[in-house]
Length: 108
Image 1 (cartoon, helix red, strand yellow):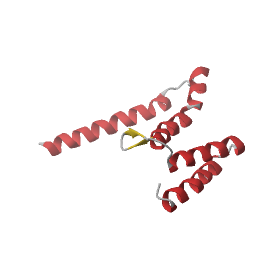
Image 2: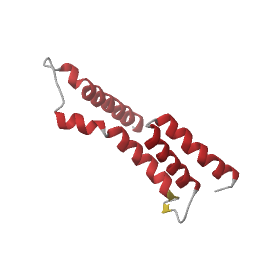
Image 3: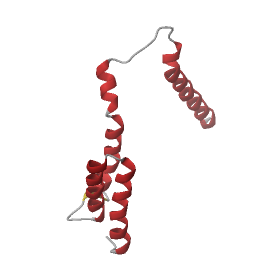
C-alpha cells in the first residue's frame, strides 16, 4: 500500500512541476514581469547567498560565536576584496586565503 502511495505522490509532484514550469509557455500572449518584480529579482541571488553564508560565519553548532574566529577574519577579508575589486571570484579566493591558514594552521 505504501508503494502505491509513494508512486502517487511522485506522479502528483511531477504533474504540478510540469504545469507550474510550463505555465508561461502555454499562454499565447507575451508575458512580462512588472518593473517592481524585475527590480526585486535582481536582489534574489545576493539575498540567497547571504542567507547561506551569514549564519555559517556568525554561528557554531546553533550558538552565536563568542570572540574572533577564523571564519570572521575570512569573511572580513572577502568583504574588503569585494568592495575593492567587485569580483566574486577574487572575494572567494581572498576569504579562503585568510580562512584556511588560520583554520588549518592555527586550529581555529
